[in-house]
Every structure is written in C-alpha cells, then in structure tokens.
Image (cartoon, rainbow, N blue to C red; front, top):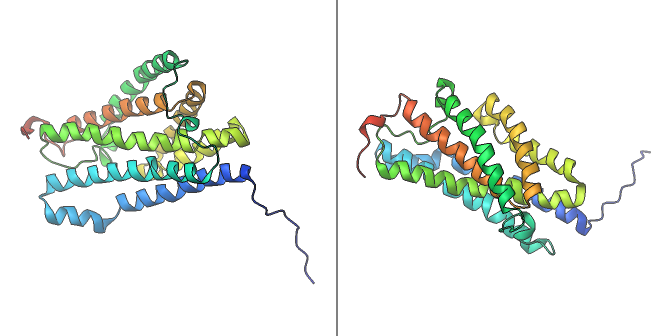
Length: 251
C-alpha cells in the first residue's frame, strides 16, 4: 500500500487574484514572444517588401503585437474574472496626490539611465540587438515611427509587469514576495538579449517596482523605460556600422 499527503485543493477568491495575473502574464508573453520570433511571419514581410522596408514593418508589427498581447489581454482577463479588479487598482490612472513625486523620479532616473544607455549603446556588443530595425537607409518617417513603436510597446510591457503583475500580488502575498515574483519574471524575459541585460533588469526592476508602489501608478516605470529605450535605440542607430545615418531619405 502507498500513502499520500492530504492537501486542500479548493480555490479561493484570494487564489484567483494571484494565479490569474501570473498565468495571464505568462501565457500572453509567450504568445507575444513566439509571434515576434516567428520566421514564418518574418518571411511574409521580406517576401512582400525590399529589405529595409521589410525590417521596418516587421519590427513595428512586433511592437504593436506586444502592446496588444501584454498591454490589453491580461488586463481584460483580470477585469472579467477577478471581482473588484479595475484599471485604477493596477496603476493606470492619474494620481493627483503623487504626480509631483512621479515627475521628480522620472527626471532623476532619466538623468541616470539616459547616459548609461548612451555609453552602452556605443559598445559593439550592443549592436547585436540594436537598433532592432535592420534597415541600411532610414527615412525620417522610419526614425519617427521607431520611437512611436517603442513608446506603444513599452506602455503594454510596463502595464503588464508594473501593473497587472504587481499590484494584485502585493495586496494578497505582500510587498516583497510580489516584488520577488515580478523581478524574476522581468529578468527572465531579458535572457535572450544576453547576460548584461538579464542582470541589469534585476536592480532596475527592483527600483521600478518600489517607485510604482510608492506612486500608485505605472507612469514612472513607463516613462523612464521609454527614455532609456529611445536613447539606446537612436544611439545604436548612429554608431552601428550596419546603418547609414548620413544617408537618410526624406520619406
């Protein structure tokens, strides 16, 4: 005869507030990642357009896909499934009591991360991943839309990590366990980009989680991440020998 442990597998409302955000974040990040990395989808663009336009359109497609899969569906599922779940409860609102705190930290962190991103982007190791658009000649429209793409994508990304995947967990398992889960998943998403970004995501994730909870909104994390991404992307564009910044076209 064998023995087994008796466990209570009943599902409580508290369990719902933890498992739904975590599982929805995991599922929709997987959907985003394998859509963005799909060779089949990429070939559709490269068969239809020349190399520069194909790269440009494909990367924008992945950015908008990231916004939809990470910034829309996980929140929608949580709103539909979890009682009393709202956009305000996960930091998507204007907090009149902390707006100045948020502004100060956005400026302060940007003064730190922008120079770091600038000098990091000059390193040839960075050119393996950036700029993501691998066009040889960039039009002014491409330069602008590259920034727009990052803005849209990072809104969805930070809304997922610093919103859906943070506030509900803090309420039910506590601040530090919630931050630990957040940092673990946040750092893991950077593994394909190399050890430097994976390790760098740990302290950055910690700071962004703490400031998000202190402000009650996602805006610090979102805007600081945008400042860092724009700096890295455009600095990489300028220094990467695969791009020709002196030969951008009008449109």
